Length: 147
Length: 147
Image (cartoon, rainbow over all chains, first blue to last red; front, side):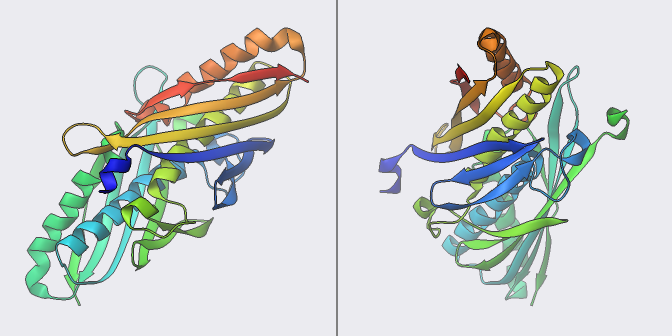
């Protein structure tokens, strides 16, 4: 049913304000200030393209995990995930985010689900639609415990 | 000088709160709530992985433009850019953001810079480090005018 409406579209807008920064907006979503990172002459303390990119992979991994966990009836107590993106020069003079490391910490309800929870996290990474859309290598380093 | 410090790292964290949503954070940056989009059972009105992904390309295009415009001494009055991402099924059962259309509206100071400004926008798209990191096709549809 859901797929009959495909494709879906996602709109954003950015408006330059000053220096290396601007305002990011999207219809019906709260706006916020964005900037180049300090290493590219931006002001510190603001969301950057690089952070937004790593965040898109991280949040897609979480929402995909939540969907698969629900389908699989996996009972869990908490989920958090750290994600680190690595920016370096790839081919001649071309900057690229070459790698993102995902470090989910999942606390499940029942110890007997430990192995299954590991497979569900792997499946979430493999099915993340943002991961499907990128060249960056995504590495998964899970930590699972029982409550 | 800048490159001697490579690679650079960008950290984010996401923590599940309830339903299909959570809190997105990054060191020294303001946190905000994220969710799956409504078409994937999330709550409307919140930033989604899909919006963050499109935003990362859009803001990277802007900051790259700002850097190249400065280097090229291009005088401009305003810059804004709309970006739309298209989500569809690509290979068998696999969702993907297949395309992002960038529609920058640039107002330059001097009419004689019109052609050069077009080249600078194209160069900004080609040099955007997020575009370098993805499989999504990025299309540029610029609108340039003189103040």
